[in-house]
Amino acid sequence: MSNDTCHCILLRKATRKVSSYYDEALAPLGVNIGQFSLLRNIRRMEPVSLTDLAHKVELDRSTVGRNAKVLERLELIAIGHGEDQREAMLTIAPKGRDILEKGAPLWDGVQDDIEARLGHEKARQLQDLLAEL
Amino acid sequence: MSNDTCHCILLRKATRKVSSYYDEALAPLGVNIGQFSLLRNIRRMEPVSLTDLAHKVELDRSTVGRNAKVLERLELIAIGHGEDQREAMLTIAPKGRDILEKGAPLWDGVQDDIEARLGHEKARQLQDLLAEL
DNA sequence: AGACAATCCGGGTATATACACGCATCAAGA
DNA sequence: TCTTGATGCGTGTATATACCCGGATTGTCT
Image (cartoon, rainbow over all chains, first blue to last red; front, side, top):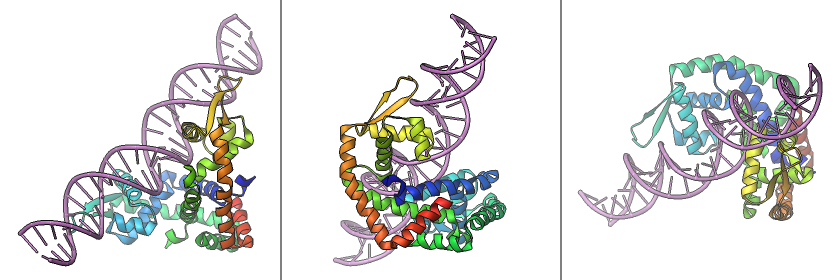
């Protein structure tokens, strides 16, 4: 029985499911929710080093580095160097800004759908609960 | 702003965090929460084919196949064949039963910790909300 | 200036996950 | 029985994620 009540497993299932909602909405743009979200974070901190970005998104630096490399190959960001030659500085590329603009309403749509299905009350509850974990 | 309220991103963060709780607790046994949970599911359906198991845990069949191969290498399960030669039938190996026994109290510990921190009320709420997504 | 520690990154390794493709096997109908 | 279509798997490919190690750069103290 324990598997049906494991907080971790239930969280994973929910995450996969919800991720697919966002992924499907963003599919026309050729990016998934992880990439889109990372792009948004980069825009907010631009220009930003891998270490700072990793700290912000609470992911391992090497993970962010590899994810960033995908965005670079898609020509959505540029990876350059700052004054400190050790740092890889990330900046949004023109195509990236385009994706950010076009993706915003798509993202809003999914977000609204979820809140409509749960109701604002429960949506808030969920976010609060997730933050408490 | 939007990144801080994205249901998907918040779910991912929470999932990573909570996964690490379980992973740390199970670390002495050399398995993570995903492997432990899969093992429990296999035990419950034993002997079970990859397709049936995948359907049960709501993961892609190829994913379950690869995860199972790891469990096989750890000698926690055995992968044989049923009457239908196409099917890969999974059964728990002795070492797997050992892990299941020793892991149960460790899993309980984390589960209890989480419920204690949230309170039974909120813990239930969380599970309900996750199911509604 | 030189030595040493701290910091930043890339790459290796491993697991988790999904999708698409092709091969083997089985089942059903001609 | 033979052909076909359905079913079950394994593998290739790609992304996501973490941990560890080693190399390069920077900062600091003597």
